[in-house]
Image 1 (cartoon, rainbow, N blue to C red):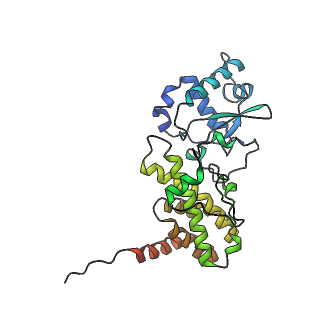
Image 2: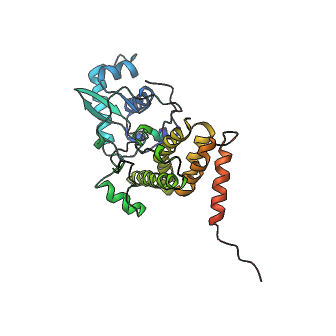
Image 3: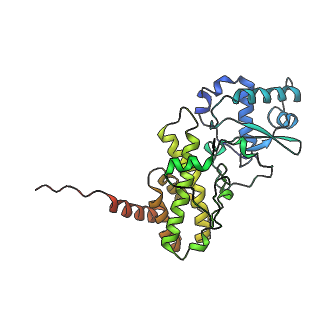
Length: 292
């Protein structure tokens, strides 16, 4: 379902967007405004005409179809992680569009599950080659295993909390095992996020950190819901997202596991988590040299 969206000023100066003509840029903006909370929208020319170009008498459905296909052709050469790039896919004879990097430009606070069919995995810029090998090279460890013994790799999609299949409930009464399992899961998703960012030849360290946070925040959302029955939201969500870009996954995991039984502390603020993180980081700080 479309809702109010935010178009950042960087859209207008993006060098890839600059390769589109004026109507093509308008199609991209209209696509963002009419996409649902998972970045999907109907791709039929008649729908795009009615939703985006309703009052433009010089553009009929065939012209909009040509406009759509022209965008798709140009975007095929863009980096697979470009936030404003959309791709098309078919389902039951219908055409749909999706922004694979949707959660890099839109972060709905209370997302509604898409009513449109999902795109096939090969249309999403997740991995190239054999995913387990890539993750092992990045993290030095094999992918974490779910409680059923099956790797969650391959079940990962972009930004969707529902695809975090790990079940933390069976370990909620064992702090050590729960911390270990949450650490491994965070490590895996963070590595996946960094790998996705590295597909862009212009990727930076900051971009990798941000991508790692985008990929791993759903893990903490899933854990928090199972541990407390509450959604991770507000200042706590923002604090967690920022922490994922600054601290090791085992420190973040420990903070969340310790905070779980107390629901985040008396005031339900990020301060409680930050106190635990600071204490643990302090234990790892190298001792200061004392002058003789």
